[in-house]
Image 1 (tube, rainbow, N blue to C red):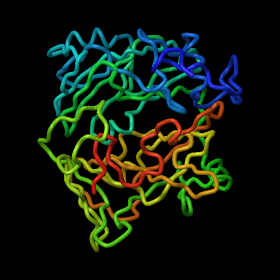
Image 2 (image 1 turned 90 degrees about the vertical axis):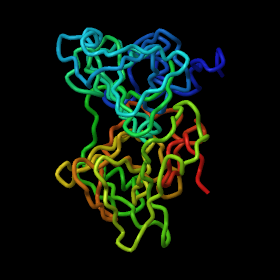
Image 3 (image 1 turned 120 degrees about the vertical axis):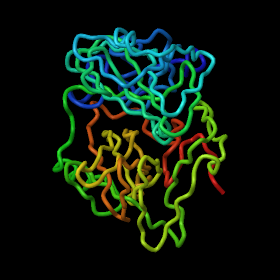
Image 4 (image 1 turned 135 degrees about the vertical axis):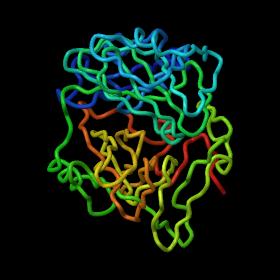
Length: 386
């Protein structure tokens, strides 16, 4: 039950530790611990109350602040320098997005976020675009003061957060409070070994076939489909209308995308600098006490980038008593040269990290998750095609 409609929920019933981070001293910090820390104004603080809808089973959605800065180029501040100081030398103009503003394709923006960090010595953070953000080809990364790398918050960091945003294909409408990035907090270094993954698969299948485990769980591409002339992907159109990030299921997919149809070659040529939505051949299930992240399989196997939005929450694709139920949707962009993808080619891998405590609510319909049981699926902004 909530105190105020739309605001942070009272802690749900369950065994919530009053101190520490749960059963294990290392791992990804789950939602019920995040809620506790937010109430106590620890680890994550904000100028405006954090909404329950921001809290995911193993991450927190971050909100854009009031102003966006159009900058000449992407940057990292580097040790000893703040983002604010760097903005003074690279900003072209400042935009008030309180009531909504369009971010143009091909332009780079930096937006201060409403949330900020108050981390302890052993607590660090990692960020990714939200699934719906990545599926729109919006390239967004988290920046901190003194950062030497994007999407990382060093252990013990205390300071503001910023989102660097570059819409690559579609212009997007955003406003104060729009959520493009999500943040995971971790205690220590909990990444699982291949031996642990094999044991985990034996206890609770991670994929619906023999697993390809090597430096994580390998996933391959589906370019065959379920029938002849099946839809196996989407290719983004250029020079389209605007996508309102905060409006769901109101857009005609064929106004923004061209379908990719399976053919007898079971392959596709990725054109340079074009954006594709494809899907994994395997169905995936993430156990309740683990979270996963998609990372490139091997940068030496092809000139393409896969999966901007890499977080897989506990419970994704998991249905007790049934095989894994959800495919991994892949955001794919070729680089400088055309590249042929073949059906079954390994294109990415999932790395798994244990949670410090199982979440009290997992990914799925009960918490309003958009992509449980998904197959090939565009972002939630588009109507399901006939």
